[in-house]
Image 1: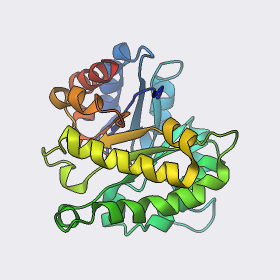
Image 2: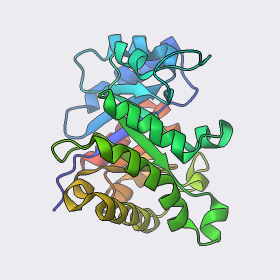
Image 3: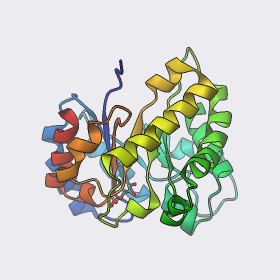
Image 4: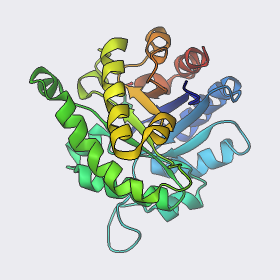
Length: 255
Ligand code: 13P
């Protein structure tokens, strides 16, 4: 009963160069035939390059973070209006690396997601538990504490039963470790997230919201993860830096 289109998103993190980016995106363009949505998220300085390279192509691009403020004395930050000037349509917010290294709270993440939506940019909101939290049986409470402020803030901007928001479940213990959640473990959390969306927003919005899985997705494990009913694609780190690997993951999403 789902008609959610799969999304394969590549988070380049702090990697890339002008030459490497060009080779990478040219390598994935042949796979972007519209059967699944494809996006790449580059460091800020390369947004102009991707705007040029991806003009008219079937690949969206975006930034890995944005400011919770609109403008002003916030040294080092980048506003949503600036992102839009470079043609950005999507932005990652709340990645665990931002939460860990930059002390981003779920309230700040909610504010960023809401500002993005209000400005017509789709936030990809990341959440997920650490290994310690999983072992302590806290998965549900951690997910709730990260998700609920986002829903509360962003649900104000549901219009005509639609909100432009994507969720990415990224268990911290699976990020960059080569250890992926099993398809069953991931599905269990995705279903929990969808149930929370349903309880707070209703069935229709819960069913139309895409929930991506992220954490050591590779061409070899993508198909079985994406086959799960509540998994609507992936947020890919390391494997998004190789056009062969990223293309393989896009093919897996296409099914
Ligand atoms: P890896 O695919 O390298 O585990 O990274 C996942 C991630 O953090 C994507 O945002």
